[in-house]
Image (cartoon, rainbow, N blue to C red; front, top):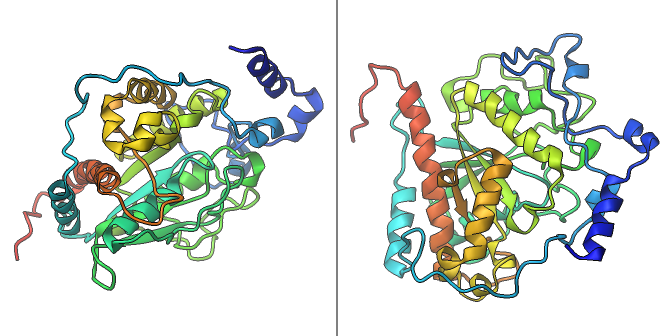
Length: 357
């Protein structure tokens, strides 16, 4: 590590005791995690205050401290099989457009995206809808890398074509993790969203966690109100510089979510920012040694096998679609839907058989 990088890291970790006392972390998990009995009772607000303390210096840090090699020899073959053709894109679009959950009680799979501020959650939603629209659009508003533009629960119905009926997929966006007291997201808030208690459009606040008195609170959510899969989103260019506490946050979150029977996957975004070859040609993503290494690092950060993680390149500055980028995005959606379907298999009543036309 260079001298400059050491100084930057020193600056980030050298917080005065006064600063540490004044800052509120993103959420504080109860001392015992084995049986997370979480309720909005009188003492819940204190127990559910924020975790993952991110200093002001860290929030202002926009450049990764890790210097990626300028170039590395590519692998001779893809470490995951991928067909980059227009035919594959069409096939994936058809598969996603025709998807419907096996359970009669629901018509759409609700997928919650969770990740640090600036990880690319909203950009992923816009990019997926762009593929189906046939042109680049920004349906989900995107903020800066320092602040989360999303402040409330927003559900985006993915349409197979503009003006057509929605597909069987709904992508849900919430406040980004990792910006201290500014996010207003607690563990109880996240679990309430997954359980289906939180109304659409609810604005999160650190002073007012979701509770039964919340306007629009769904007291008895049905299966269609719940989240059926959680997709964690992490930025490939920041995997090595995320605060250490974030890994603990991710892994504790995963434990709680798993206890609800909800399957989890992960998206590794901004892969083009760590690999020049992939930036020039997306089809090189699975031949990149750097990206494969970052997949492993992301797995360690999340406490998740790399088999659950897929790389993604969102549309950002582009004005036109690219077939290879579309295939990578659609493959990520197909990956998500496979795990959402596992949820329905686990929660479909025995008397519910396959749907028939």
